[in-house]
Length: 281
Length: 300
Image 1: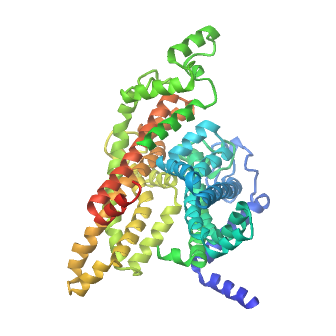
Image 2 (image 1 turned 180 degrees about the horizontal axis):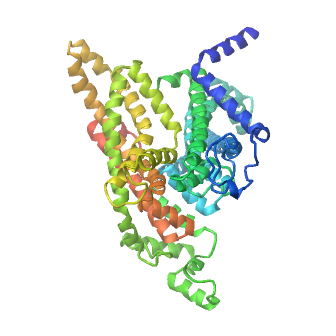
């Protein structure tokens, strides 16, 4: 056991993508947890006397149009990014897995109806469909994440469906059936555990997209509303004042790129570690 | 076709379910309830859902998308004025992106794991982590604010399109490049390429006659598949650079809940997407007989 554990750690250690991504994400998580200690000011504290201060010893990333400290805002923004990743990831996972399992396991009309719905969500480009859903359920960060998850679950459903189809007729599932296991138990206890490795890979590869889409909607003014320290919102305000205070759009963007790049690397690394045949693609 | 109908239904019901009374968007708050009901009757908002849908579809088929509640003008005229801007942006971006990404992808596949390949792949990985709106901000900062070569926003001349197109190209290139590379690598593994080498053909002939010709199939698919993505990307790009295109129209209409415009734009994009997918399927079938066989054998 300990030998196998050592081997796993060694393999992770060797995988450069995984390690770099892991370290980057760990730093983001730590910043988000200890934001109260790291940020020198409150992110919403306005100080009209210090509007558009250049980055300096007092204000590391400068101040914005209301005199709020940009560094504190970027630090608190990490909490939003991680929350988005968590909420969006789990929503997509739950919908996608449920639909995919049902499609693959029951087949027939269930499969046809649900697959048609999946096709339908592929019909309109994601951002546009998310825009429409946000119009319907209203602005706001949580609503944006829900909208994006309602659009993005389809790729999970497809993968899960394909895997379920190939697993359904395997001997161990047949055995379970022979023992009188219910359909639900067959799906959750027999088939699902075999899909989990590819699910982990899919989640980590999809998370940067989720964060990016949410930030994009916030940038368009439909996601987080002021005074939230959301990075997308900050960049959108920064562009309005770009000739006067370029640092307002640079630093939140850097934070966003750092985080998504970390997720990307981690995803690539996990794919190589957990799902070796996907590597060739 | 079924997809188009479903999407139109979806788009319409989405807007129908939208919170708020559509009449409130048209008139002032001061107008009396009776007058409101009259207007609702005139615009057909008091009819049952399916009658409204039927009337809307009837109008759309005749090229009448209704009237914008905000601009008080015909939706079709409104879109007609905006389409050229989006078309210019998307068209140029598509052409330039393909011109850069395809040769680079091919080169990466030929010299796999070489220095150039690794550099490009890592660079494109980094680019996928960079959001388009931030890239646009950086471009504005560098070329418009610091160097003063190009205007920050507006739409007066060709100079206004350089930054938007550059942003779209750079943010979309990573994906295109990766797909090109994997597809070309797959062609390398095909048996006919091995056969061609085994016949003793020089590398150049194999490359041009066998690999490139088959990679063409990929190019056509890429062109048609990337059009919908370009359009959705255009929403962001048009917002950054203040271009008055379709994306900007959609965004503004969503914010003020201008239903007819949102419906029309969404429907147009959905139809365009379906058509693009269809064309790419057909073209692929024509260029690659193997796909034709598998398609006619399937349920399509």
